Image (cartoon, rainbow, N blue to C red; front, side, top):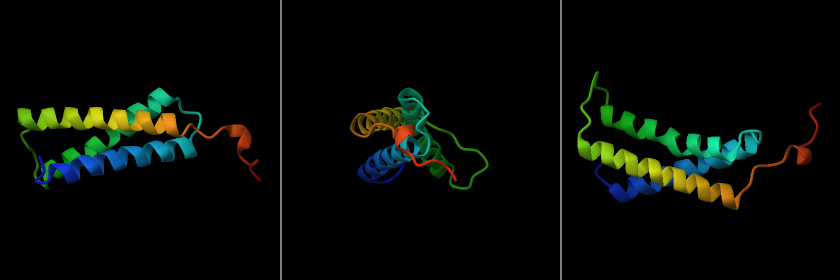
Length: 98
């Protein structure tokens, strides 16, 4: 898929963790399951768009799909770990809007 697998794995995990933290902070109403699903799968669109590389269409081979599934599981695991370490901000602690 991409040349440097270690860079791809680290970047994907960082993106999933960042999205999970942002969703927890900005929208505490979203439950942890939906947050994990969104945070774990959203970076996959960016990774697969790199595969297109400006072409009108592209063929994904079996290795690309296996790598995408691995990245999806990594993102879900990273988001779940971030959710356990950093729970969502409660609405009681937020200041009232003016």
